[in-house]
Length: 384
Image 1 (cartoon, rainbow, N blue to C red):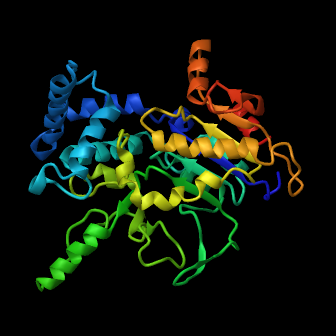
Image 2: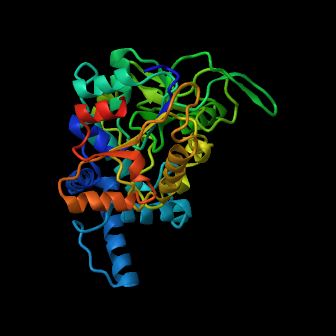
Image 3: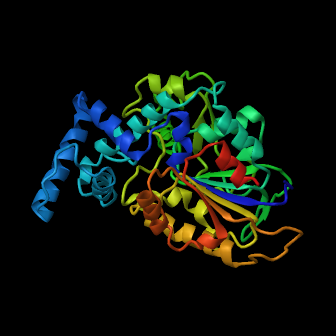
């Protein structure tokens, strides 16, 4: 396939399932199991969970126990408490209150433990990475680093931000399109992302107080093998929200050090209100409502369009409508669009219908459904 046949591929948790990574409900059960033995400040998670159960009983007359709590709704409750500062001076940190930090850190720990090592990526994902071409856009809702490791393993260059720039101007930046690379946008952050902003403020405070020491931090002033590297590369605006975001090279070593409350991965938890924290990633969404019209391939893998991601539904709706309606069946630059490929794992006709209902804005006459999960046949359908 020509490098000019640019594609948009959307990834959800179902993409990583075949590599042994848990999907949302499985992740929540593992978090619940680990939180039963929490102590000290981390016990605040269990207090938060009990508070939420009381809140639902008092406000909605709903009787819940810890096992029946809806993960996304509980985290939405915590997000509102933190975002509005309802705890006042007891607000824990900019990363969230204690319960949120516990969840983010445990997500990082669990996914890191489940991640195949860089030299043991399943062939399925290596094959997927080999098929990706420069200028393809991958929009992923996954926190894991499976795709990045697969791309590294097959030697495919990629970036984790929308645009490179040749220069930064007062009113306009000049885009650099000379690099042939795949664009991977992690719309919910990543378990290997850590924001250096708070650490830099601590450094300033130490210097003001005359200290020659540096603040302790397991990521930015530690001895992690491989260290960190910035997310961004090349000329950037000084107020770019990702200016201080870094990737940790060796996440396995980092999470084994039990970093709870000393370093928190930058992720948007699976909350009904996660969009209130999405400002650092706002540029990732910029223009998506106009994309899809001049792309020649599109696939959505393992993303069931859950109800708590309404903002994502709006963006994907625009992408799909543009893809299936603009220049459809027309020869453009020597190419024609291929059907939208929808990949998920559904075992019964009822489940397939439920999936189709979530995507009822799709023109299924211009689509291919593959409901056997992400596998070799799915790759063939995407890259036909």
